[in-house]
Length: 123
Image: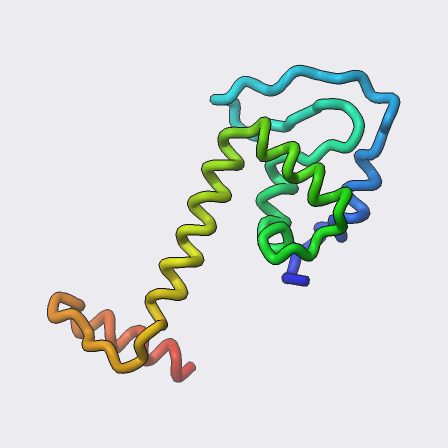
């Protein structure tokens, strides 16, 4: 599995901590509200948890029940769906940037930038 933010437990721990089956069903947070949490009762996946474990979600490393809760969150949260789409596109673009090791450097790339990148790679 991928590295987690410091102080953040395993997703199974988070999932179990939120597995209160007696919790009442709550409405969705307003779409424009920051730190939106989807409190649907039962197993809860917050936007923060989705962002923290997105790599595990995309690599299919989450247990089936946890992945199901993440899928439920995505069906209800347009902000996380946009985040997921942007994340996937960023990964694709990053991979494409390294497809051709022999590709010519575009002429408009500043020489100072090239030197900085090369110096950082040597460090």
